[in-house]
Length: 292
Image (cartoon, rainbow, N blue to C red; front, side, top):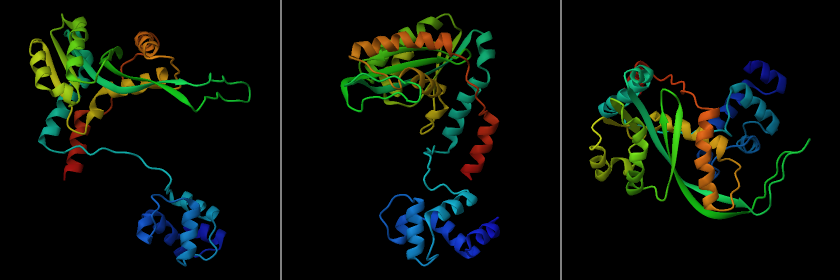
């Protein structure tokens, strides 16, 4: 394919390889202050470096396409600390997910909890113009801020249903006020497997002391930098996409009323158990590969 591309564009294969190598280097490597490449900047620097005196950005785009290089894209990733603590905590959480339905049959529930803090309550200065044939919806760029809201959500893993609460502050005191309401529906369960991340309000001594009153609650904290093991994060993402994006609220109380009405509707229309494919066996294989 490389030779065919070279013949098509009249460029030697060595030039194509040099363009690919340039695209894989950071711009700082050639004395630039840019933070990412574009096809035009790659073409310009390739010409200045003498790689190809007449190289165009369209040719660069074709070279990158055939090499499956995408300098305009990136993806975040989070590095957990791979140690025995990670292995044990991750295995405990994954054990609950693998057995959520079987545990429910034994009157035990797996409950995931997470917060979406500081959601901005925004009101557009002008009414949004709805879509029409041939026109997409148009929103006013300017907006008025009406404060923020902290939203706490719980997920019942074996059913996929949720409950939600609005907190005045994202701290331990406000969390502890809500915990009795959060745990009350499962007061008759033999055990509650409570999964959440290591946020300061979760691991605070007062919160741990408070939860000791509930002898049937087993608290599982996800490993550091591995909050993605908490299925409540998936829930909040799915909930936000349907009930928060493109919203327009005139005041904070309207937004809180919207949230209070939205999570029951989510349960009625969308709730289902998440398909969780990362098992303990896959985690052990992944751990061994990256740990070594």
